Each structure stands twice: as structure tokens, then as C-alpha cells.
Length: 211
Image 1 (cartoon, rainbow, N blue to C red):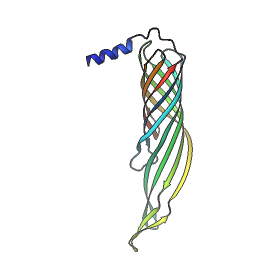
Image 2: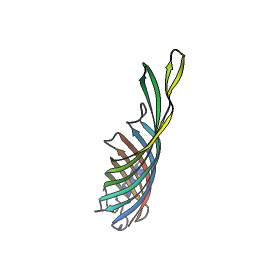
Image 3: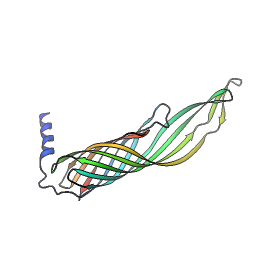
Image 4: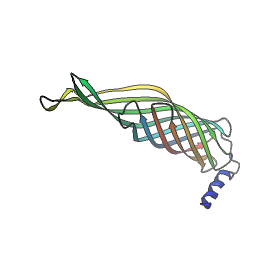
């Protein structure tokens, strides 16, 4: 533990031999997303199997203040809803599977710590302008017929959509970037959506270069 603490302390304080002051960086990341969509699912609002990819540009206003612009894409998330409906004096049931694809253009204001060090932790606050496409796979509407003593179909299965919407979704971020050379760095971060019924938790890592 003492050795690990010593290495971490050296990385955060050891100079990079006059690291150039960056004006711009480009980066790319991949990761995993845990997506919640409270509007759709009846009992399980989360899909934990969504992959994530992003490319971005960062503009340094100072050594510690930076604005990131990113294009990010998620693989399809799936949610399952179930409903009971009164029909002609009896209760009918059906389920709906929601397939949700999302892509976003995001802007993040970043505060980066330390100067001329191998490791830079950072915090960010941002917003994604999200494009979401939702396709519904609606199962047959069925009810139990007591007279016939069997389940009968009242409506057939059908598909609806995709329905496309655009909306802003705020998030907070925390991460760190570690320099491999004076300009090339590796980056890892965690982004958490806040204040919206559809939100995600994104864990990712990637690489970038300063210019």
C-alpha cells in the first residue's frame, strides 16, 4: 500500500519535462452504459447491456478549464412493459417490448486539476442533445374466456415506429487522464445522467492527443 501511494503521489506531482501548453485535444472512447427509462418498463427500468462509443474535441481555455464537444452513440437498449386493460367486462393483458436507439451531441465544461503532471483528475458538467428512436413490438391483446375456458386473442400483435425525438439531457462527469508521452494520453471517466426520466450511467476509457 505504501508503494502504491508513493507511485500515485509521484504521478500527480512529477513534472513532464516542460509539458507543452495544449490548445486542443482529440479523443475517442468506448465503454458500457447502464440505461434507465422510467417511461417504458413496468417493473425493470434498467438495461445493463448497452455498449457505448464516442469521439470528441476539447478546447483548453486555460491549463485547468476546458470545453469538450463529443459525438456519442449507444447500442440498442431494450425494455419490457406489461399492462392490464378492461375490455367488455373482463381484464385483458398484453406486453410491449421497447427497442431504444440513442445518439447524442454533447457539450461538457471540464475543470482539470494539476499542471505539468503525469495524471490529471477532472470533473465536468454537461448536456447531451439526444436523438432517440423508439420501436415498439406490441404483443397480442389477450383475455381469458370463462365460457370457453381458454385464452382468446382480442387484438393481433403489431409494430409501431420507430418514433424519433430530440431532447436535452444533463449529466455530471468525473475522470482522469494519464499521459503516455508529453502529448499522448489515456483517459477514463464515469458519466451519470441527472434530472431526466431517461438517464444513463456510462463507464468508459479511451485515448487522445494534445495539439
